Length: 120
Length: 107
Image (cartoon, rainbow over all chains, first blue to last red; front, side, top):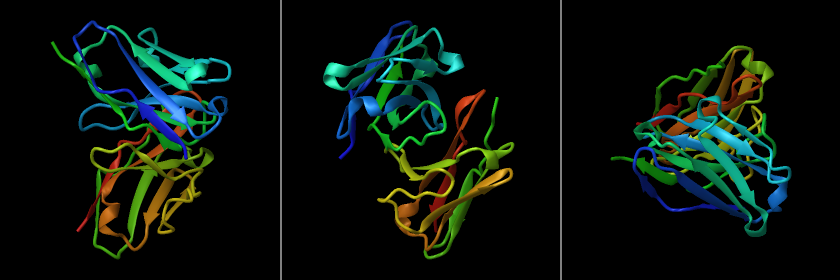
């Protein structure tokens, strides 16, 4: 079966950086890209960006450009999302979700989520 | 930017039908996907491409889309259907957009 397993919860101070991982299995790694989606406490879903494991091409949400970097490690079938200059309003559960391409395709499998807490 | 609208909440008695709407400009020309999220859990895809149901999702879930509105219908509602439901589209200028979510309460 398809599995997306994310790294554990993180607590960071404002101004710090965080790197979240998403390890995938159960399908050919290069066949599907990964979107990162976050959800602030009690709020809805917000798309952060998408990366192709085949080309390394990335697309980031406009409001996060310059603070977020998405990468892959083909040798371990793992995707990474790094966010810098963290603020308190970055506190959220961050999910990775699989989709074939950047646009129009459904997010058919999701990771379990990684809680990011940004607090002094 | 592209905006989706959903009613904040829908209440339904067990065995009845829940109808959740999602509104957006020219929504019928886009592919609409629906996600179910239970408290403390990751979202689960329940309908994609307007009306396609993943194999693991019960046949009680169905979807449609036309004009400015997409609809998720849950027939013969069960207690386990209580969750937040989000519509999701991709727009060429706004990228991935989610609706604000609808909380379905089973009475």
